[in-house]
Image 1: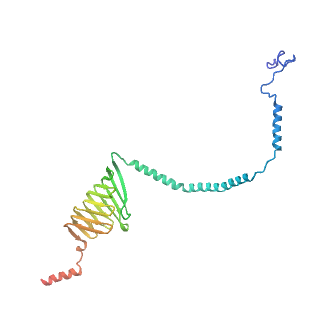
Image 2: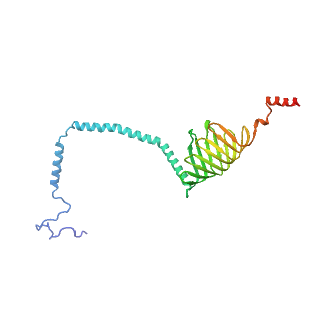
Image 3: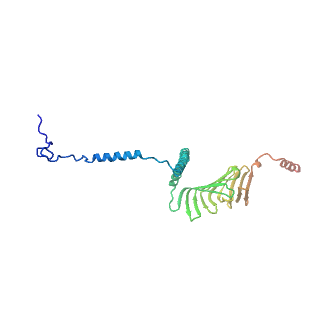
Length: 268
C-alpha cells in the first residue's frame, strides 16, 4: 500500500497549480547556458588563433639549452659512474678514520698523562723513527717523560736498530731521547749492547753513553766505561779501560802468530 509522499508539494506549496512559483534545486545553475556559450566561444577563438614561428633569438636560446644538455647529461652520468667506482676507496678511508677515532678514544688523557703513546719523526737523512711508551707525562711544551720507552730507528741500507729501557725523557723539538735503567740496544747486524743509560740524538743517528757498557756481536765481546756510536757513518768507539775478546782469538793462530811461537821455542 502506497502512502502519501511527504516530499511532494502540498496544495498550498509554491509552484502548485494555484499559480505560485515552484521550488528550484539549490545546485541548479540558471546561467548554465551562458557558461556553455562562453566556453564554446573561447574554444573557437583558440582554434582560430594562428601559432607564430619562433624568432632567431628564441631559436638561439633553444640551441644553447640543447647544447648544454648535450654535455651536461653525459657529464653527470660520468660523475655518477666515477662515484660508484670510487666508493670502495671512500669506504676504506671512512673505516680508517673510524679506526683512528677508536684508537684515540682508547688513549686515556688525564692531567698530561697518556697511555700507549706513539711519536714519529725523521732524521737528517729522511730515515723514519718511532718512539712508543707504556705511559707518558707531558712536562711543558717540549719535554715528555716516558715509562718503558721503545725506539725503533731505520738506518741506511734498510737496516734498523731497536732500543728500549725502563725510563726515558723525549725532547720533541731537539729530537733527543735520554734513556735510563736497563738500556738494551739491538741492531739487525747482530750487535747487542746493554748498560744503565744512553743518550740518543735521533736527528743525527748518534747514540752515546758515559756509563759502563757490555757489547756482543759478530766481532766478539766488549766491556768498556762508555761508547760512541754513529750509525750513519758506521763508527763505533768504546772509551775508557775495558776488556775485549774477539771471536778470532779462540780460533787457530794465524801464520804470523805461528812463526812468532816457533821463534820463541827456538830461543828456549
